[in-house]
Image 1: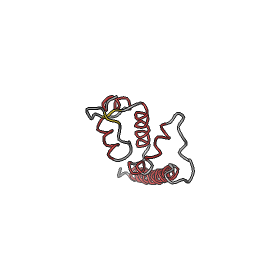
Image 2: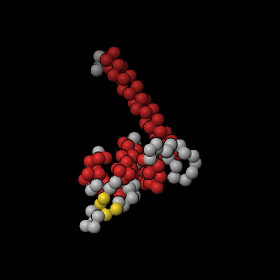
Image 3: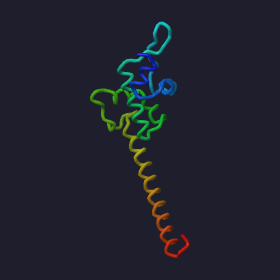
Image 4: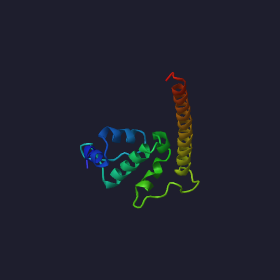
Length: 128
């Protein structure tokens, strides 16, 4: 299938597919005789995995360092992310991302608590 059809099948745009290819997340696809990109079901599955991982908060750089393993997550059934301490495994980047999310949740919780305390104090003294 051509780039527009592959993008639609994966829920994205042709521009995103070209971006993934330029950044090394998606291997260069086969080309037709006229030079158009040609994608198959395997590439569409890989594009869906890339989109899902990016939507979960991983970055293009996180994925680029593991691009050679992304196809494992597109397999049926997918490989596990915590596949050990091997170079290029996903467990390290997932743990790092979880730690960042935990820190952000803690920061936002403190911010919310401070704001709520301030709002209640202002209301109690009649200034808010």
